[in-house]
Length: 156
Image (cartoon, rainbow, N blue to C red; front, side):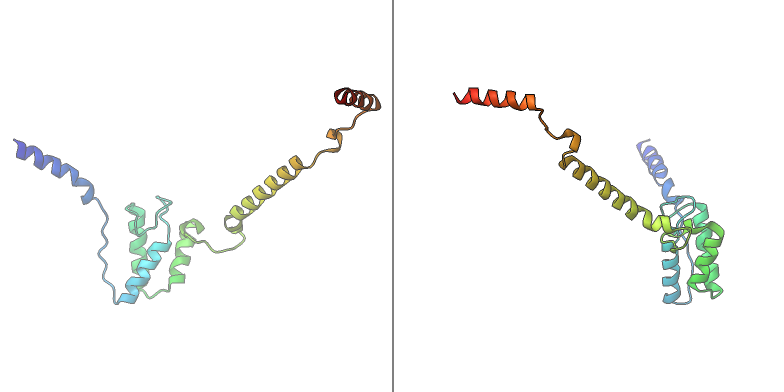
């Protein structure tokens, strides 16, 4: 009975391994294999959104890997393959999108926000250090006389 229970637990724990995607593609040479690896690493899975298609087990990632393999077999260049994927899925499919009118905010937005934050902090610090004119300690004549009288009392 214990053996049966142990076998059942082992079988259930291995079910996740059986669903892992394994692509078995044959390439003409190592250069083509390297191109395939590079392309699958620089394209993002549309479903997972923060995984490249080489690491994703999503069905769409498997389809994209198959499509890249097919296009490599047809002799298309890396740029042609990337252009095809961008045309089909948009700039989002690239981990490093090109700098153009649609992606300038993506490239320069974080630096702009950081610079804006530094400037804001600088303005706040400068304002706190410099006294404002209306906050300056200006005493009236009556207050000056009273202060002088109090100071004279303390020296006696």
